[in-house]
Length: 306
Image (cartoon, rainbow, N blue to C red):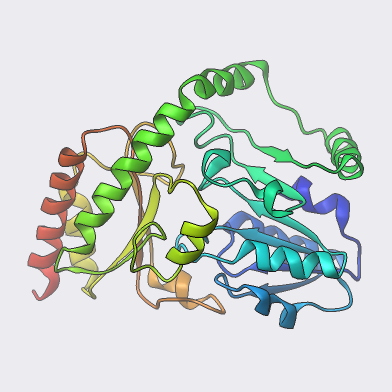
């Protein structure tokens, strides 16, 4: 993401980033670019044509993520892109959640598309790599220069691992998407669940946008539990045997990650003030995954009122 922004902004420029963007991007923008004289602002993660109210005469780039990291809001990408193109503003999107199998940013006019190849492309949680795609040769030339100047390179072994992962990518993606939907539907009916954050579900606020623009739902979604003390959260995690704690999602093994309420409260446009739990569904049997979550939620419930 750094190399997708740095070549295109200068001191005095203004860039917009989603309030639910990847934490590394927010840190780079707010802690590094801001020190270099770039004006940074955030916009609501579920915005559409309303993005116009955040655009300044100096706006150079709009950074998108669909859905938002952790909280899973769905922006209206075509509406945002249309507003950007009317003003000659570049757009960049992190498309890792849907991958090119679920969403094609270039077909919607996005200028730069980012993929964390660490996730779905590799598929086995054993490498670190990313990609930037563009249809504009002039943008490519700047990206290529930036890569050379900053010394960005990958090893032949990591390239091999991505190529290996791509051989099973479509099969894994389809199966993990199917399993994620099954697990999410089970969770939404559980009495201790306050809300499942997953645009593929019909009652999600972003479902209409997802259904219009996307062809798949991926393996990653989040949920919010009914409030409980920290001891209940600890009991929940201690009871899990199949899900491992981890943040680098998209591999064959299912993961769970925890984001405390403080993270959401620190946001400008947070959709919740409660802790959020994020699941990455792997290739395990879904009934085994559901049983694991069920015993964890039983422990959460048991410790809720103690």
